[in-house]
Length: 221
Image (cartoon, rainbow, N blue to C red; front, top):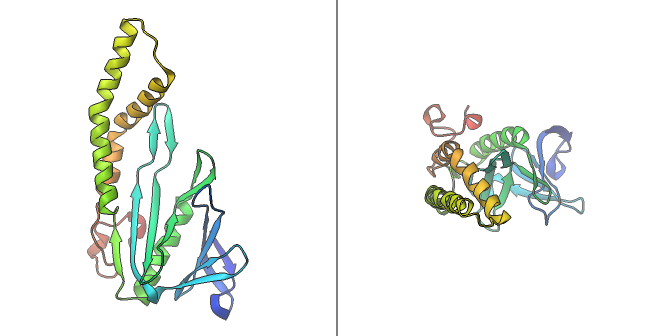
């Protein structure tokens, strides 16, 4: 989403990258744009909240698996960019745009170029910032444990359903739904593992990382 908008803080009008998304059901759509020195968020009252690049302490870019079930994808993979200032709350940009309850729109085609441009501008404006790629360690290990649990639990649940069928017992619909989700994850285990593997939490330097090793393809260059 590239559109001509006025520059921040009274700067002359220019073309600035823009990204819009709704972070959750409880919040409205948010609009972010980039200047050469800051990330700017347009607030609901028509004002601007300027987040100078010079005040950013770290930025983390990572992806996390979506939800796959029997018959298709229930939720798309999600990419995030988390900016932590020296003071104050972190700013989280996400490729997931909430349309409604249980309805997500994948905005990665707009998210990726915006974040790629953001990273390059941060590197130019703030040489001391820490760049991280990959999930936070706690989230990464949580996914490892979840996938291990799926591998162990799914065969047991399937066996339970088979036993109930053989003995002509009633099978509760929630059990069938849970089994479908578990089987969907199990059958897509390779895809989950690749996503988790790509998102281990090393650091990177966009200016000195040889060939962009370890970076998402869309962040290279």
